[in-house]
Length: 273
Image 1 (cartoon, rainbow, N blue to C red):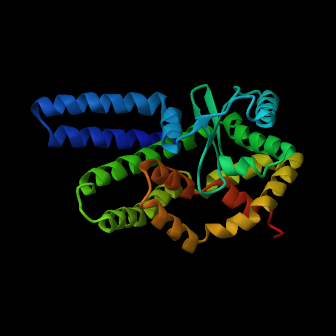
Image 2 (spheres, rainbow, N blue to C red; image 1 turned 45 degrees about the horizontal axis):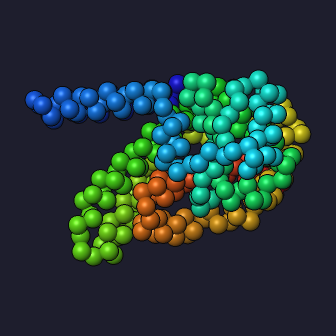
């Protein structure tokens, strides 16, 4: 409910801003643009997120094991069959997006190389459990809003700095923007969803000990990469993103947001660590 309310308030405030600041023909053009944003925000959040991640659909012949795992877990949980996608990111992440009855599972390409067959089943179960419990749409809306905001801000900055003669100045501008924007995005995420989302997910997972055990094995595989998620490493990734495309900057922005694996594999399933 908080994610939907936050999205509606953002759209209303943006509409009021256009109404106050514009007039005449510009207002009607902006009104059409605002209505287009409303339509996309209400029905196509998942499509926008797939675009921001640069995700590509996986064919059944390419990743047969993943397809079988997703189909099996969707049938077991009685949820819609998800479409599968992969993207090229910097962190090992998986996402589940839901807009109405459309469900998408998006997997980092590097993660597919380290996950075994049974572990993929547990991961698909964890993702589709969020769909079963009605949690996925809330997170999809918030990720859509934050990811779209990051894309728009980076695009505006890119248009204003492309004419600068010094490449270092352009990179410094993007780095400074990310330095300010990433903490703000994480703060909004914590306010709207917060740790309560992950605790609720952990509570649902506690009813399925077999899947918990398999997820713990995934945590062991990711334990070493998790050390790379320190503050220093994130700042290095921010510096690297400053010179990359807007797609890469959007990917970094979404990957840096709190993820269930950061909670479950550090304080949840692996408390004994």
